[in-house]
Length: 485
Ligand code: 5AD
Ligand code: SF4
Image (cartoon, rainbow, N blue to C red; front, top):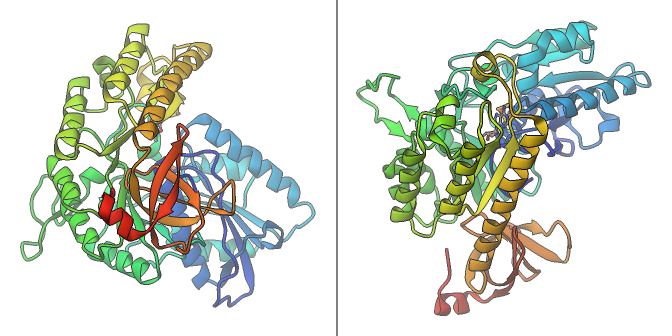
């Protein structure tokens, strides 16, 4: 899982877990996830719903009776990759006619008939709000029929479903706090694939956090397309629904979750510049276990482009939000998303993005070429007129500017002691551990007595643009010399 703890990674492939108990029918499910963290989190809900219907998850694709791909539509290349995977699976079915293949998530929502009827790539198509219907749909498929449900809902939050945790390390987990998105950014397919925004009952969120802590988890990431617009017990016009109950917005929710235990770290993703309040920043500043890291996608540094993108803020507004973060939490790490070559983007507008990056100096960024998506406002209203090659050139400039800033960030974090949550062996060298500091920077250090799920104190000595390296020190040394919590 990528350390950025954020939205998209089309490179990421599903991780499935070993067989789970209670496997009534002895059938095996292989579940593969693509895209954002929300999808990975949804897959854990799917695993839970299908476990109750007799399916145990397996890590071995070859022993599966049912293969489900939880898919992403955010950019065309994400969909192309999944399409190739489906074609590969279809060929594999020739040797194993009993195998059923289904598609879940955003591509299922977007392309249902095409995948099922025209290209005959799958047996089953289920959209993000229809997972409760999976047992019935899977039954139909087992009976030899094709099955589909892509109904979107205004209420579904899967609030009371206990996810089956698919990340077997058991240290960091996701909690989805809301679903859907009402923002209608003109480039974005999400409102069409995930429907209207709705928030989940705060009690069920807090109890999920308690449950994860009791199981040994030490970090939760609260997930939503726009966490700053989380609201409970208040309608869209701001009216209280139940006067007997408190109103819970994102600031209060973070307060509640951070109270679960001081040793439970809390992160969240994704914030929206137009909705991020000082109140949220003040709660973060007050509590050590609310990690000092904010992902605040800017998309473009020019107000005219932001207007065409329908982002709901200007360059000045965005800079004001950055200033608020710096004022309230001077050391907070900030990362962003940038799109290169949006419709009508002039050279001057592109340079405004570079200049904004130079002003903010993000610790990290996810950077993309604009990819036109069917049905979006941009597709209907604007021409995708920046040539592919020019998009690539602008993206390279953006990446190279960011690389310098990322290097600055890790250099500045060198030579200090950090409290690190140990996540497990380092990816590159099993003799070393890896974890992250509060700023979400990956820290690699030689193995000591600490176990995954415990905190270690690490003095950083070396760095690349993305990673810090260091040596663990005794707690007494950390306390004496001072450390970053
Ligand atoms: N083209 C390129 N990037 C996109 N994103 C969303 N839609 C598109 C698109 N059509 C990026 C945005 C968003 C991130 C999740 O993906 O930067 O913040
Ligand atoms: Fe997540 Fe769907 Fe958006 Fe992809 S398109 S990032 S899966 S919400």
